[in-house]
Image 1: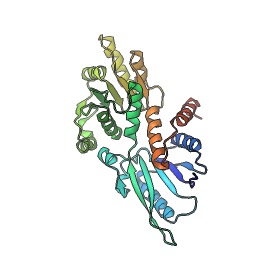
Image 2 (image 1 turned 90 degrees about the vertical axis):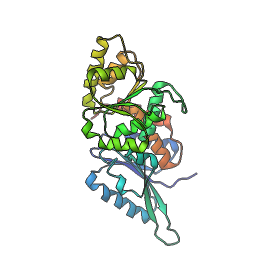
Image 3 (image 1 turned 30 degrees about the horizontal axis):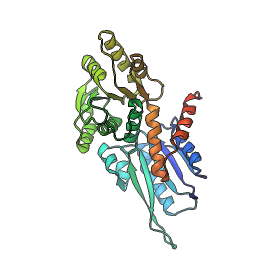
Length: 311
């Protein structure tokens, strides 16, 4: 079945480092979607509305071969885009973060100009669930997590809490630097109907929680992984306990992170952020193309890209 060529792109600021083009382009090639293009656009919160508006106006004109399929969004646009959209899917609305925008044509034909509607989705939750399942070795439908920890209180933490609830733990322990800066996360928690506890980082309490957890998701920036790695290593040196659960560190540059290295050195399984990246992109491909994502081809392309030294 022939599919008309369409366009997609990743937006963010900064965004030049994004691996999304590698993943989506590999998917288009494997699916035989000739003429499909995936671009990169540096877009800020201030320029986002204009960028979306230009797409909708151009697409409504139905220029042959120029229709847009969707957008991937990275920081700082995942929350800023929400009020600009026509529709937001329930999961994305509850989490308070949209990382995928889909375009749909409405009306038009027979000489009439149609309109284009925008819908916001969240595939980060899918990506976290799939990455954790890889580390846990469990199949879809199983709920293997009884105790869980989330490090950090930003936008990704909300997606992590939704993912952990899907895996069986709606009451994860969330460790943050300050309880005064997690207002948006508290609002997301209320919308999702989950019941995590919020605690300030404390050496003893955090270490104990990490050791006992079935799953740990670190959503903190890469500079923080050294801190958690030292905390874990020092705790193991003074205790007979070691972590048994799986760690997902959403950071994939550097790879592995200091926290991942410390975790695996203690004999526990860890999953890198590139696995979350792969699975969330695969779900985006499914949503944008209407076809099952060619996961193996995307995985191979990602592994190759990660092995190629940055210029």
